[in-house]
Length: 237
Image (spheres, one colour):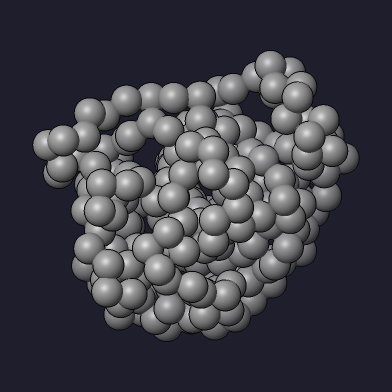
């Protein structure tokens, strides 16, 4: 698959849960059929995000433990811990990928992640393609198995989710770079597979993988005035 347009590349590091979640929401809300597609790569403070369908009041202990550095994503799914991961967000017009359905879109957009892991000499597979894995849901993202979760040596790494509108598909996800906690709720990291990468190293490999898989050109960019306005309104709320 080859995209037709150049991509905006937006890089941000060490933001709070609310800041990162609201940037994604602002990008999604402002994206129109004429918008330039976007790849955003970013990192987090020690924080937590919840899926759009979860009730933040049900997790008061998490809010205390993380000093309210907790927010809700605009996508579904379960609780995800941050601060040890690199995250990505892709925003494209559905026409850019010939209006593929949800499953086809996951398969397509995850190809750059597959290339990323293969570059590290790992053997990634989708959960749906492994007969030993039973697809299941959990309040914690890293515990359940969705069809297009990426599995390495039987272990899930990271997670991906989508939000769709008439003029925009947003897909985002995270790759844990190092082990932060032995709890199953934190899942596996690249360090568990003897791969040690800094944010900068992972960022560069992800960018190269995206360029190779989708044949795009990037220009580094920041939020524009409309996006900043929406972001500020979200932060007030």
